[in-house]
Image (cartoon, rainbow, N blue to C red; front, side, top):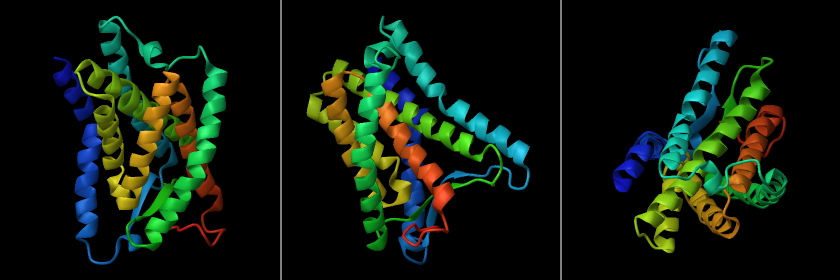
Length: 246
């Protein structure tokens, strides 16, 4: 039952994203022209020219993306545990924010360098973090999207997946490998650089989770990294020469 539960949770969330990313990458590599001449948009407009409808779709997408997290919370409660068990709570919020900021600072710059290098080598698409209209809700929606990504990925691919694989008898190295490859695969739509970089990030996050016993710092780090990427792109795109814009 635990194996079936895990497969269903992944099929409703990041496992489905991984399959979609593989299909997307296959389409990109078979398309005429190099990968760096193609682009992948992370947060795009859902109703161009209709800002209120666009806002409704953005909020709907953020809310529904978090439903698998609610499902995981329900499943943990049924076994007598909770999200607190995997360290997703406010008990140590300053610890989570402080170490999250440290991790974000260490990983963020390295990740940007890897992305620029992979794109220059032709292994990566041009990643366009956002293409929202210049309206009042643009920045708030980008921040909410960053937090949603962080909560969904770290709660499921680290806290939940590692807990379930442990109960299924997997060794720690095997569980880390599964979690990290899963993370890398659902980023494959960005190209091989995106996959390799996120796999490495996955290994680091799993090791930090084992050390701290909490996903809280990982959620904070991920949210900060994505917020800087989304908002930074919105503010700098077209204004600095080193930032590819698709």
